[in-house]
Image (cartoon, rainbow, N blue to C red; front, side):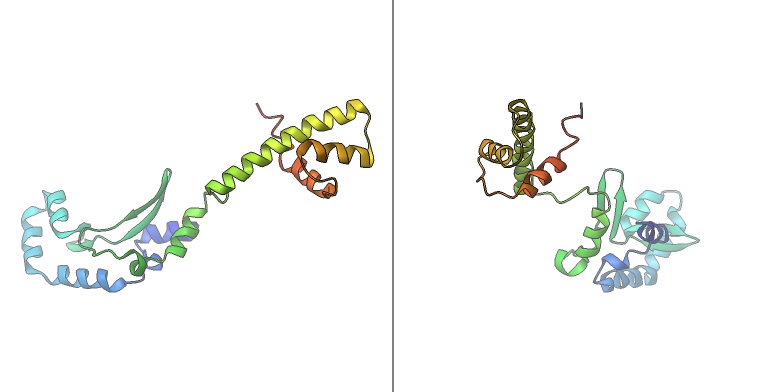
Length: 179
């Protein structure tokens, strides 16, 4: 993350872009264009319109700074800026693995509809296990009898490993205490 922020500060997005030639071609064309120099001399006061016309980020000491394809983390997500001049090809132009690694820095875990459904099922089973555990204690059940009671209540076979019950309890042990 820190390396990426340093790259952003320096304007170096090359580690996310496979086809640097597109930027280099545009940069060369812009820097060699005499119209740009004439317009820059006349329009320094009308900066935004000038930069828009030439696809520039800005000017630095009379040197044009062409817009780059950029990937930035913001407080709200990952922003990918594709300049207007860029004929974007998502498969060839970006290193998606590098971008995904960068984005995942803030993602708490894997996400998927099936994973969410499985989590909800496990949460329900953990709550039911907690209730069954209380009932087993009221009945004075221990050992194998308690294990069989818990498995039957969850709809599991009696041969289910006790480890599976422990893992289910451990995964959600604090959820009942949360407000």
